[in-house]
Length: 279
Length: 115
Image 1 (cartoon, one colour):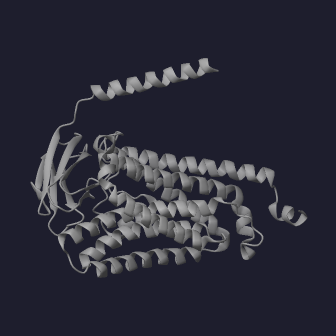
Image 2: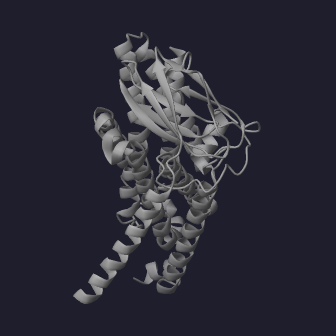
């Protein structure tokens, strides 16, 4: 039962950490809870479909369909996060200033909710499909204690996600969105590096040489902190050069995108609070 | 306007052709085979050359899915029952790299010996 719980925990943890960061980053957005649940529901449904179609997906692109699919899911999540941080850079100031009566005075637009649903659904779908195939294998093999392992692993993973979420909420409001934006950029960079790792595994991209370093003795990706850092910032104990390259490119591009969006917003709304009073 | 588009299309096609030619010209990486039988790897130790990209063909002969995974050389791939998967590995410096079946880690353990 513990072995089942451990595997479920590992998969749930990855999704839970991503969901927590996105949930924190959309703090103050009306109807956020419903969007979160909707995203999780869609993700679970998607996970079942992906597990059912695993054979068909695997056979695509002359045998590397699984890698292409995983890379596609990861890159879709990266695009959604990129859109969100750049959107936040142009609207975030007003959001942070009027946090106290958010929902009444802030028109948040559609972006945060769409992103919340999409990223949550994609994260749950990817990790969930592995859990479904694992449990299917156990069922076919006639293993016991399936339910108990599932519940235990799920509860442990969700608990760590909640701890991260409430930890993030303790960040003072004036630094809050800067902090969640930084976390989102690192998350996106890590997901891009993961996507590229799948494409290298499928031989669709070159590794560009041997791994750059080996820090597995210091911090193994199989350890809990190592795995958490892998999800949160893209930590890899033995990164291929191409992974570091795309990691840095993502950070750079999102940083530049945010800066441009923020400047543009500043020009069109030089002082949003006064503007809000006069309008 | 249609003229410009046709130039653009021919440039893209030329680039794609060059890319395809380069891929075709590249030597096929050496192939190594592994099987999963009763949730164990056969062989449990596989030797591959250092500093070389290799093609690993893993055949799952069990009736249940398995996930081939390695933290040491950073690979993960689900292999459905009675099917095979291709995983490209390396280039890697010499050393011992562990891999495992994530769905049955108690028995499915293996070592990639790179020399």
